[in-house]
Image (cartoon, rainbow, N blue to C red; front, top):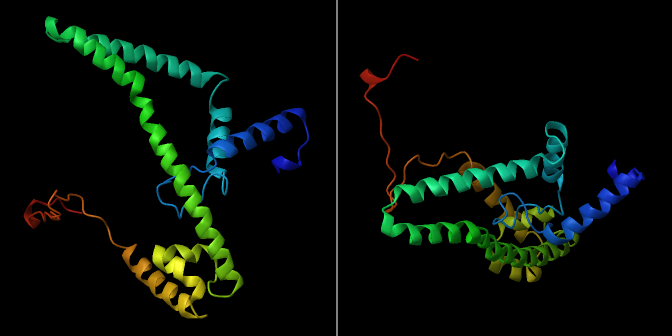
Length: 204
């Protein structure tokens, strides 16, 4: 594959990609769930994005697109400000400018959280590896069917207990995964199910 090619371009790409994974490899799709594989474990989604950009876009397209969004954002901000009462425009302009400039900062605490969760994930996988080597778990991924307390205590459990427990929870998971979440859920936790009258439902 890619790591068997030794052209100058591929060597440079591999080096840059390793640097990227060193910094952002702790991230993933649905990354708040620490059971999900990280980019360093499975970078296939990143390769799909890269391939899509190379296939469907010209060089520098993403930068031009970003500049178009900046221009559109400026136009939208000016429209909102012009529609506001005259005495509020100075404050509104400042608020809009601050919001647009600082909105990206929300990613910084999230990134810090993801880095911390990644440390926890690696420790759990180290424990899972030990449990697999002892025959207590079939695969390392089975560890995600245990609670935090069970993971801590599992190293002292007798062989067979974990496999039975994981087996039971896999069965429950398979059943629960077939449920469909409600379309509407109120703030009080009430599930709203509306059944239309049969005479109002069109054929088919």
